[in-house]
Image 1 (tube, rainbow, N blue to C red):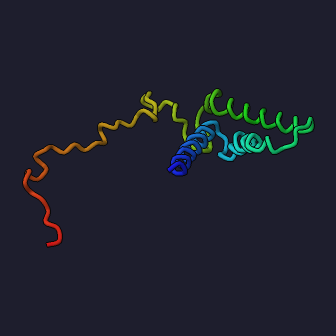
Image 2: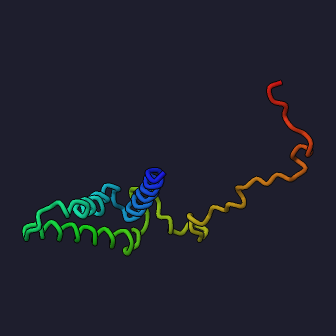
Image 3: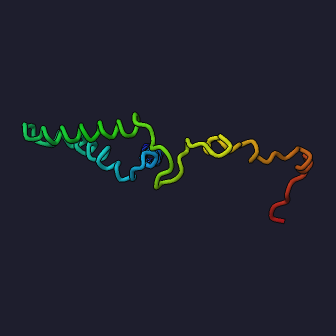
Length: 127
């Protein structure tokens, strides 16, 4: 059960992070230097020798993580369309935003109760 939850979380995280990178006009492969390399360093740092020549590796991992944090969570998306699609915040000809132009209520098909079969009817199975 724990593996299922972890894989579900990882799938959601990767999808969201890649969508955010696409919003910044960057490839999803930027997750490798931003999160996977610093994560690998942090995961195995206790196995590495405790000496001063490991300081540059720690510094590079920290800078990559900080750069990824700023890129993903602080800086706004690119303005206008990019190679990954249209700008979700751009205005259309009528002045509305395309991200907000879809009305869910107009897409729902509400069936009145009179369209369903009467209460006592059911389908005979296996007959």
